[in-house]
Structures are given as structure tokens and as C-alpha cells.
Image (cartoon, rainbow, N blue to C red):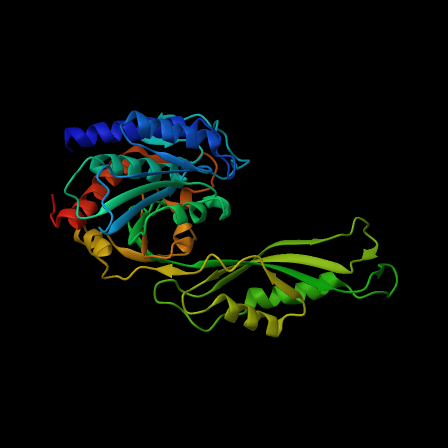
Length: 361
């Protein structure tokens, strides 16, 4: 590791500790946004803010050059109720850094910031580089990456920082959430009255649980449907419910459109279906893209990710790749290994060197 990389790693680790100490739930990221602007300014970068998104261009940005986006998010989910540590206290112990957002996606965020700083003042880059710390990723909000992309110059491709153990997620499933409503007729539970909407919903839920969509992706596997919420308006135990509502989480591979999925489900459902959005489509980057090939030259593997990220909202090729492990995300006592951040900075720099200089240095 070079002395410059040591300095970058130290700055990244200290920044992550500061970020952990500030609550930054989705749509409440204003304090971490201010911290990020301050950090970048103190390191000689002219950072801009749009809502709670923070962005910056490399110093010698030249229109007409191909442009690489480095992106990760600085919002977090709320802490799991099983936390035994203070989620807003950065605790470094046994090679781990504990704290809310350390793994998802603080480690990726600060490693990409360090990478951006490494290349910031270079004059002979073959690519422009834009850095964006986005908001509202955890809720797929419209005030996040989707809001900042229109103010940026055209982007050719991106690295999206998410915990992937620094392997390359070249594809990820899309996400569609369905609000479903079954209707019946109210009646007294003690008598043979009414038409139980809950039973109708159960029939549809059983179908969801057992149905297998025919097309299976070699990278992303089958479409996955999961019922996550069910409720009626009943407060009394002795009333047959006339309305039952439930929510279906649908993870879609690239072989189906959202419309096709809805058509298939509706053919078998008694309940009505209302999709919340068609925004989070399945996405992929070609295995032979120069960015992917640069990663492969370092021995990185490729795979398809079952989880959705801001990658889904990018109308250009994007590679999801970052330190940490997705299995640690949204868990109690979340942590990232400190050396994962260190190694990520080195690997990001090597990959971009491959791109901008066509060298392995």
C-alpha cells in the first residue's frame, strides 16, 4: 500500500465514524449531506448539494470525454430492535467497525470518496469522473439519485457502491410491490353470514406461495414473490371481514416485464392488484464491458444480485460492487471489517487505472 493510499484509507475510516454518529434515515439525511459537503470542501473538492444529494466533478472535467459515475448512498434504515450496541456510536473492535450504516453502505461510500479524491486532480484522465452520494436509496425515493441525474452531464457507465464482498454484481433483480385487496361481505361470525374476505385473500396467498414462474435467468434465477403484509379493518373478533388487504414483494428477473408478471398473477387471483411503481426494473451490464473486464483482470467474479439498488434507476450500464457483505445489512449490531474498506479503496483505484490508463499499476 502506498503512502497516498494510507492517507486515503485513514480519511475514509475517520469519515465513516463521523457518519455513523449522525442519524440519516431516508428523507432525513440533511446532516450527513452537510458533513459530506464539508469533508469534500476541506479536501479541495468543490462539492454541490441538491436536496440531500451531494455531488462533485473531477477538477479537470472535460465535456466530450466519456464519463464514469461513482455512486453510493448515505441514508440508512432505522436500527433493528435487537441492537445491543448503540447504533450511532462507531465502535472499532477486533478488526470490525460497528455502527448503523457501516456495512450498508457506509463502507462503500467512503471507499468511493477516497477513490474519487485519488483521481480528483489528475489532468490526463481518459474519463471524466463524477461522484454522487445519494439520498433515499433505502426507500427508493424520488428525491434520491433519480433527482440528481438530470442535473449531471451525460454519464456513460457507473460503479454503484453496495456491499458485495467486492465481487461484481453485473445484474440485479427488479422490484415491484403489489397492493392487493380482496372483497367480501360483512356478517356475524357466530352465524352463517357474510363472505369472508380474509379467506379469499388466503387462497390468493397460497397461490403466490406455490406458483413457480417458468422463465429462470442464468444470472438472476427465478422470479421471487413474497407476501409481506396482511391486514383487515376489523377491531372486533366476531365480525366477518368484508375487506382484506395484503402486500406482495415481487423480485423480477430480466426475462419478464412487470406487466407480464401482473397479467399472470391477475389470471389466478380473486383479489384486485395495484402496483406501486414500475420504476425499479431489472438491470444488467455486459460481461465484456471494459469496467467488468478491468475487474476480472483483478480476479473478481461476476454474479446476479437478488437485491435492488439505485442501479435500477440508472439509464446507463452500472456495476454494483463494494466492501462488506449484503447479509449484514439491516441487521442488529451491523458492522464492516476495517480491512474491507482498505482493500476496496485499493481495488477501486486499480480498476479505474485499468480504464483510464490501460495499465495495471
